[in-house]
Length: 293
Image 1 (cartoon, helix red, strand yellow):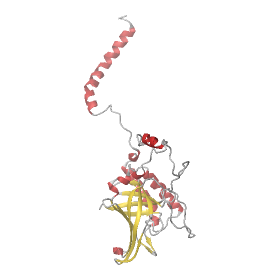
Image 2 (spheres, one colour):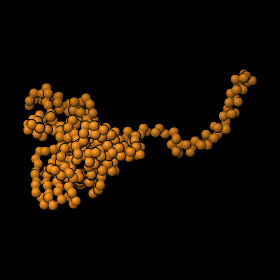
Image 3 (cartoon, one colour):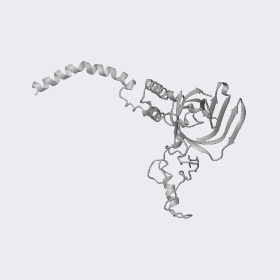
Image 4 (cartoon, one colour):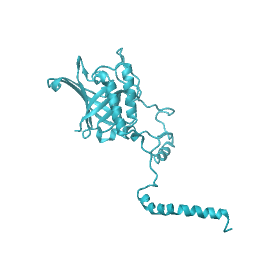
C-alpha cells in the first residue's frame, strides 16, 4: 500500500543514504586503481620481524656472546643456552633458500661460535680471529684463523662445496678414548628386496612416479629440498704459516661436513656445521660480513 508506514520508512532511508551512494560511486574508480578491494597476501614468516626488531635481536646476541670473546673462550652452559635461544629466534626470520643466495659470497668475521679449537680462533696457546670466505665463482669455502698484527701466525682450511642431497654422512671423527665411530649413519638400507632381483612392475611404477616430481620414490611424502639451505663441504687442505712461511700442510681425502645456512641477510650469516648432518653434532657460527669480494 503506497501510504503504509513501511514504504515511507524505506523512502526516508534511501533519501538519507543517497548522498553517500553518490560519493562512493565517484570514489569507486580511485579505490579500484589503488587496489582497495584486492586480497592482500599474508606476509611471509621470514618478513614477520621488522628491521628494527632484527637489529635489536642482533645486538642482544652479540651482548650475550661477549664474555666468550668471539668464542675463543669456550662458553659455559648458561651462556651457550642463552645465545642459542636468541640465535634461533633470528633464524626464524631467515629468507628462503639461503644457500643459493648470492649474499653468501664474501668474507665473514666469526663473532661467536661454540665450536672447539681451531674453529673458534684458537691455535695452540694463541687466540686470534676467525674468518670464513666463500667464493661463489670458484665454488670454494675457506676457514681462516689469524693471530696477532698482520696475522703473523695463520691457519687456512680450504674446501669445495656442493648442495647437500640430505644423505647423512658417516662420522669418521675419533672419540675421546681414541676409538672410531664405525657406524655408517648415512648408509641407505635396502629393506625387503632380494639382492639382484627386481619386480616386473618396478619400471612401470618408476614411470608413474616420474609424473609426480614433488613426491618421493616411496610415494608417501614430498621430497625435501636440502640443497636450498645446506652444503656438503669437502675438505681439501690445511696449511699453517708463521711469518708468511708455510710450516705445516695436510691434504684431505674423503673428509666432509654439512654446513647448514640457517640465517642470512646483507650483513649477518648464521651457519650450523656438523659432521653428519643429523643435527645433534652441529656447532653454531654467528658471523658479520666484512667484504663482498
